[in-house]
Image (cartoon, rainbow, N blue to C red; front, side, top):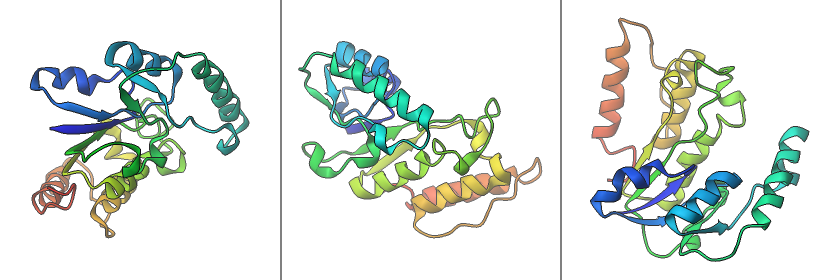
Length: 201
C-alpha cells in the first residue's frame, strides 16, 4: 500500500501503519514544528511549497506565514520523502509513481464544538473542500479524511452535505439531523461508500 499524507502534523497515520509495511509517497505540512518532526523522525524534506504571505486572507495570517517562512529557511537541506508543503497546490507531477490511499485531517476548528463553528465561512473549513479537489486530481484508489464529530451538525448539516457533494461530484441534499434521524444519515453515507462514489475503489 502506497499513500500520500496531507495536513500531516507529526504524522500519526504513519505511526499507526508502521507495522503494516506501507510506503509513504509524500507528506504535506507547512507549520515549522511538525515539519521539523517529519524531517527528524521520518526523513522528510523541507516543505516544497510554503504558504505564501501575499496570499493570506488577513494581516494576522500574513505575519504568521512570514514567521513560518523565516523558521523553515533555517532548516537543513536533505531528506528522502518529499514534504510537498501547501497541499492545495499538489499535482501528480510532484511525486513519483501512483498512490493507493490519500489520508489527512484538515483543520477542524471551524466545525468543532470547542470552536466558533463558522464551517465553510472559515477559510480553515474550506480546506475540507480542497481535500476533495486534491483527491479528484490525484485519483487515489481510496481516501481517508479525518475530522471532528461537530462536522455533522455544523450549520444543521449543510457543511457536511457540501463536503460529501464535493467528493461525489453532484449536489446532495442536506441530511436531516437529530436523535431520530441519525440512522437516515448513516444509511446515506453507507450508500455513498457502497456505490464507490467516495474514492475510486
